[in-house]
Length: 567
Ligand code: ATP
Ligand code: MG
Image 1: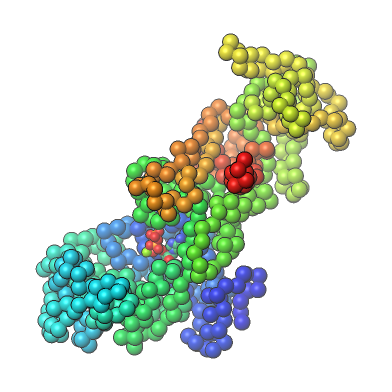
Image 2: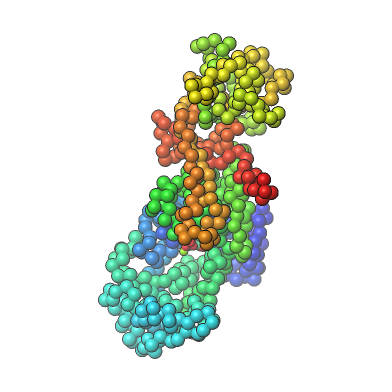
């Protein structure tokens, strides 16, 4: 067994171990990741990518990237390009094994002709309604199409004319001749080729008027690439007999084994590409890379790291039983990664001006601040204290609501993080009664190495008024307000379940000057606020935009636990 013991085992790895022991496929392990280029990849695809490429890596095998591009009307090179970028970003490499099902269109056509010649496929002219009627139901057998008994010559002729573009879409289908009474509906003479006249394919252009169906294309593509284990999601379980049937008719090809596992489904989001496309097309989100999307490009823009997504895929594991994973599982993965690796910084999201009256005007005191509380190798940076600073509005209350309140109150004391203890002497309010400024004094003897010396209840973050930088901050929440938007039967349109509060934009926020030149994508912990990254799309040198990747703690889990307890 060559399995890496550090990787969690699963039933697929057990099958592979057995195959290696028994010498099946000559002990080779060759997998593939086969996306259809009809949308951007999402976190569900990441599960499949980590599984396929992970198995290849751990068994010293290979994994191909193959575009399953048999439906020209829905596919596009935009998706072909983004998929490659996303797989690479996740940390996987297909080396020189990038394939397209469309690479095999000639071969597939040849195999279709071979099946016709063997009397195992025929051209059928039933229309869609008749097809349904002839197909039967789960409890009743279907009926043979009148075309089933046509001669091989007639079928070859019609198939050739389909290819030449003589017929309109839907006029004919090439069907496998299997069994119209088969208990598995997929085996009731399934379609192998359909007409898509005039379609422009992103790889083959207008060469073809007919396109092979997925169930015909997939097993043959797998076999031609020498795939040993064809891993797919559970909805293909009922298609496996057809996968095997196709390969049984073509003994010149090898016979990979199809193994199914359950799809990832994640709370508070949708995973179907059709639905995600609808959100993008209808401008319900800003694009595929909207940081609220479960797409890889959205997660990347949100600040997720490849490591955190791979860790998530390891944690959820591979099984045959479907379940919906809590968003907190994904968020914990990025939180742990950033807690260990993101430098700390101070940012004030809702600034409240504080004037330190005994700090001389025009003075600036430079103070060192650790970039990470545990990891000294991350070094320190300089922060600057001046007479005017900003603290967060939420860190001040006129009167403490209870004894647990550790922030600043009128007449109370608090430590400015990495700096001195200040006391609030006076509040200045506007005409509406809102507090717009605090007058404080600081105690110059409190910059000690031993802050315990001085009993203050809390430590709050702050920035200097004139050594800080104004930025925009975007706070994200769940895209949907329903944990299972795809299962909710009460609404007609899943979009009715979108969370209207999923994006909150804060302007006029202030970050310490050390962040003024932070490059696109750079990640930080804003102390006491959460993990943030420089938005790679909308941020510019002149006006920085930060995305909140994730909060510091799983506050959502707490709210849900309280809701369960009826609080
Ligand atoms: P969708 O229903 O979102 O359109 P799909 O299965 O049609 O998804 P493909 O591009 O065909 O999308 O998927 C490529 C591979 O990724 C397939 O092997 C598919 O089984 C797998 N995959 C897709 N969605 C998930 C998911 N949610 N969890 C795990 N694997 C997935
Ligand atoms: Mg698909």
